[in-house]
Length: 208
Image (cartoon, rainbow, N blue to C red; front, side, top):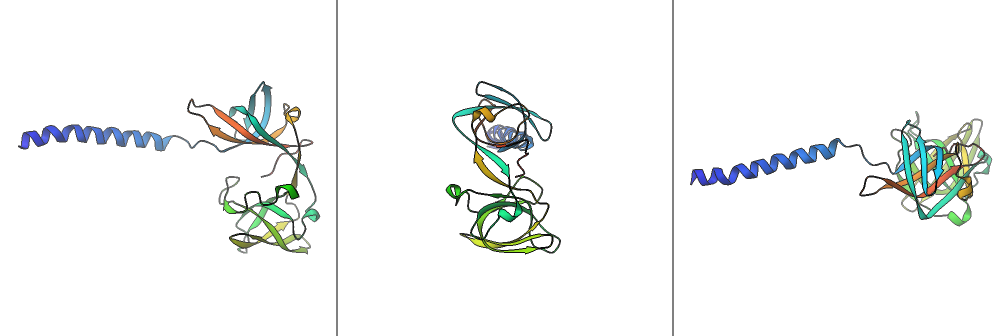
């Protein structure tokens, strides 16, 4: 009986070691990006070549139903009570989230991604899409109270914070040198595709 138990145990131990090794290898692989921020280097048919902000060369296959929107600069004063906005915030020194960018959605995009969630722009950053309920203008920016379906948040918007909005764009805007944010998906063959791209207008780098 001891010999038989050993005979069965050895393969199980070997299988467990292989499984553990595989899990370790998977854990060491970098996570697939969901967003690529960078500069267009070239466009070849449906393949977009982008130099990412971190210096990587990324090729993206654009899907036939890809959505393209432009990002244009506006003024901090364009943020009004009732505006539906998105803002990336980081913890402020006084405990109030501080905006590092704000994008004002046009009316037809109201409700897009409503809520608050972790974001990948900066360490410890959060993306909040919500309606401006209160806006107090100060000497060095705005203090906003924004409300969304699951809660509310106070946000400090310094005067130097970039503020942008969405404008129409088409594939003719995809030119070398343009700054983009591409929302990506990794395919089984290891390549990446994108079905949504935000492109800066007039040389603007999308701040979100």
